[in-house]
Image 1 (spheres, helix red, strand yellow):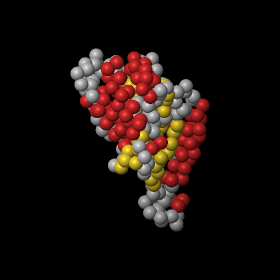
Image 2: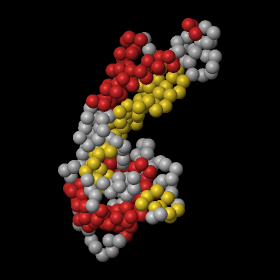
Image 3: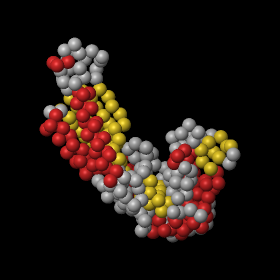
Image 4: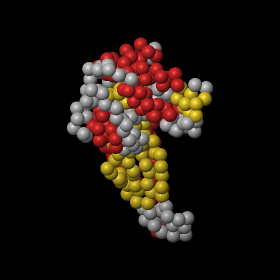
Length: 285
């Protein structure tokens, strides 16, 4: 880590070590003040992929009235964000020597038709507007196929990343794609299948009307002049906590634009204000 120009540079400084450190400092500075609620600070793991930490909290059987998920929101108040469902789709072909390709079935050629159909579906998703978040999306993010240069490829796989908006369910998104695949099977005689189970991470319900949102908004307004209710396109641990019925907001220092970058940093002024905001939330809830 490096301090320069009132910024702390370093990997994870804003995503999300800044939020975690602010929570820990806020809790440690309560002193003799006794909050009305029992405060738990959880340093959960694996938020970027399977959300194992948040999932364990949600399945622990313990009851929580609310949650503040630390992410770089520039001290604005995220009350809604997208979820996701991710899985693989495979096309099966028949291998043959490329000198006689008619003796085989090219799985990559079949997958090309699948990709065109899925891209069209992704474009149609843009019409599903939401008040707080951008429309749902479908992205083909990885592709793998073939054995060697002189063999007709017997298989091809793609990885699909489908972003969900509040109100959409993973099973709905999977069913829509399955209908597309079935149409290709019927029309093009393509041997295509989804490889399940998918990695499911539903979009949490909006927290606009929750007590934790109003308490946090007041703290943000008092200390930083922030606290606008917003929605964001990325996902957080709030999706898993929400499945357990826990009202969740997302709030923290730093900008999401700095996350995963070579020169990640966090503004020290925001970090200090976030400590005060978290502290006020702990005492006011």
